[in-house]
Length: 248
Figure 1 (tube, one colour):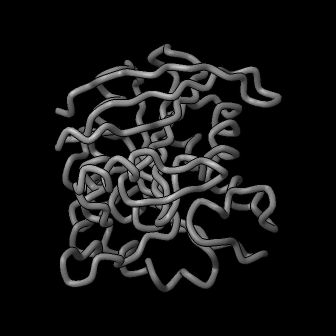
Figure 2 (cartoon, rainbow, N blue to C red; figure 1 turned 120 degrees about the horizontal axis):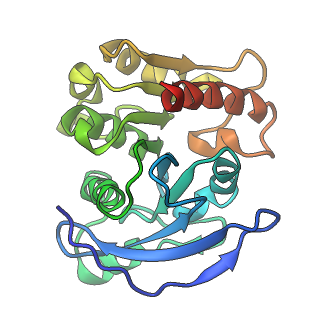
């Protein structure tokens, strides 16, 4: 299990929500300190928890708009800086900067340990009865893979724009062949073919694939942003999935 090291706590009010935002740090499996933003509604075990992972060249700032809306829906959220990334939403990726300084590698697959460490951190630190992993682009593929390999870490998985991003090293289609957890996959309309084979390979009896009938969406979790036309359709589909997960 990842060693837990909480440092550098600070609080600020989320605009219009009154929820405290806390920045935390804990270690990945190779000792790299990971930075994450914590959006808490409640520490009660009945409050579900969504762990958020960004896309390539991004940071935890990818979820500055999305995490507060998840709070409004009654979910706690943790948005991670993986070691493979750069910046988003005006927030630099602090984990990636540390990884470069320590020469620990910053490729997509190197970030897989960070994703697992974040889920282990949430499992160890909070008593939530429901933990959900949400990935974007390359991290969407990694959370699908991890959900098949270590389902004990989560209760469901959400993947925005997954694909075969790892060349001959890893086949996500093969990796998900044992995935029995509830699964939600969505993407921009033009990306549907990129994940269809992955979706079909998932044996779970509770899986949802979503492409909007109207609008086109964007790559990764950006389809949820208010500035994207018809983003409300993505939210409707996602909320229906989340409701089914948390009420069963």
